[in-house]
Image 1: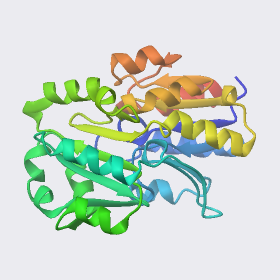
Image 2: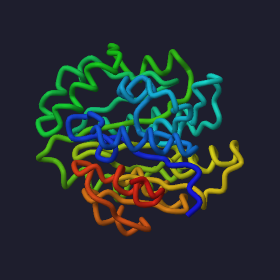
Image 3: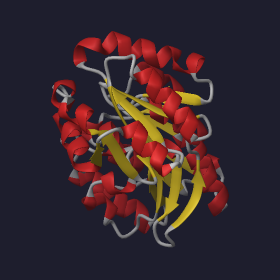
Length: 279
């Protein structure tokens, strides 16, 4: 393929399970950049939640953030596209989440917010995801009442995220399966073992990739994309070559054009090297 742009998820894809960039992946990104390929992180994270070792790479300019709710040009500090959740819909969603045994937070204008009471209960929800707990502790601003804070801000949000305890995983899967029936304007996906990520139906990594391609004059057929979670499926389908990680679920594999090695085996680096002929 004529590969002009490579978009890649972070957690479970480019990063290892300790949230670090393996050296092989890093070397291959440099080699691809030297060949003129545009490299684009596509993540559920906000910009400041991306590891500094990645954010500081000199060839990264464009980012698909919060599952496509924000596509951003860091060089010109310019928003390319947005797909926010209106405030009233956000508050109705949170009212529903109050009926479930979950913790929830949100991203608004690239800042994470969480109620203090929920934050204090967080350790019990991240027994199997200690690295994610660390990120929550670092990236969420704690407030007395999240819904009241959002009412005061009176602005839409980029993403709502909620977390289940390990023993409630069956309920998590059921919630994802039926979420759009309750909220047709929203889409629920997942990126790690205990979370649900809610975005506007106008967002999504796939729509984010297409918006970036339109802005840059790139044919999506000339794009390759990597992912492992259900929040990556739309992006794998939008790209000319969608690649599922070896550690991806069956739904992600089915949506992809190819399956590469797992994130622990540097599957991103190996597939890029195969496609671009990097020896």
